[in-house]
Image (cartoon, rainbow, N blue to C red):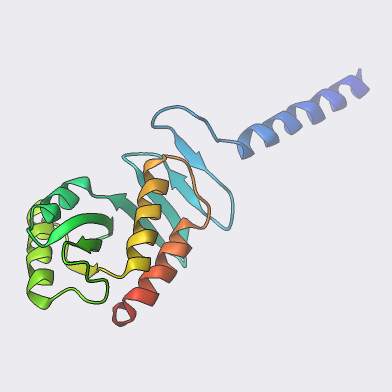
Length: 167
């Protein structure tokens, strides 16, 4: 009797251990958790949350802001990802310039972003071809609604490279 109860206790504890560690589901707006250095990924409104460097990052594709930026005559396409109160904008200009975005156009884009989302405090704009490709990739990853390990770190590396003054 004692042997059966010990075996049953071990079986129950094992089942509870494996059940508690695996919270990944494939349904709607469930919360996904990956226990990888404290990373937590949520699948709510196409947002990605990660506890990295003791800060929580909420990355969000802002399609409304993208549409506002595309209304500008000089802009062919735009990708906007917001993080906290900052918006990062990758634009493809109609004139094909991949080096710089003129100051007056940056001001117009900033104004359009802030009209779209009044909580945005800072807007960073670039037409750099590599940045446009990276931002498009990040947008697709965020919209896939799947947890992507390392996305925040890759995004931060890209932002630090393109906007070194933002450190």
